[in-house]
Image (cartoon, rainbow, N blue to C red):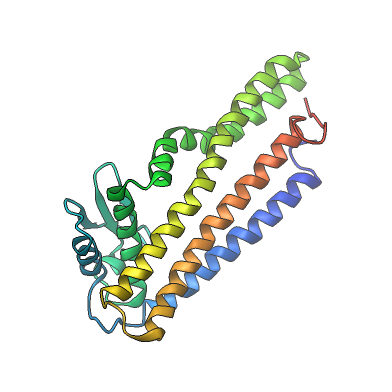
Amino acid sequence: MFFFDSLSLTVFVVSLILSGGAQLLVSRAYRKYREVPASSGLTGAQAAERMLRANGVAGIGIEPVDGMLSDHYDPTHKVLRLSPDVYAGRSLAALGIACHEAGHALQHARGYTPLFLRTAMVPVAAFGTNMGYFFMLIGLMLGAASGVPGIGRTIAMIGFGTFLVAVLFSIVTLPVEFDASRRAKRQLVELGFLSGPGETSGVASVLNAAALTYVAAAITSLLLLVEWAIRLGLLGGRSEE
């Protein structure tokens, strides 16, 4: 049955290894460097605010938000939302993450195209992530059970199309996140928030590990897309209707 076979098992195992490994790396880096104080003595919120001010970006709110590693920039309301340990923390991890989110605010202010593209894709990508898989599965089941494969295939292809947008969203996310980290690393040094290569490498370790989670998510999404393309007969000539 197409619900669980060697193809789905392979995709599941590879995805589990990728996502689990990436989460392990970011957790280890964060735990290590949240215990290392930055010599500047700044909190994450202070570093982000000074970074924005130094780049002439005004009107960006900075506020705490519950959760661990729940930090994000909200482009709709122009607010940096930082988790408690990042907002009030004075560690290398706090400065790196806060300035990474400030990097997204800089992207917004500078008209960084991939950020605006990602923001525009959010509604369809959210639907594709949550419902695309469901529509593909229901479509294949309906086509097999009803004896009218055209109906099932139409439903499955709608699911495939919305899931494709979700995959494209995960790919567009990569340059957005890499660029925000690049801006953060450069600004932390140029503004004197870090002292010496030890602090610079510590921040880089946190941000590079975090970037791997987005890489893992993009690869996982691509693997799922390929799996369903095969099941729908779009690759390899195999259809499971």
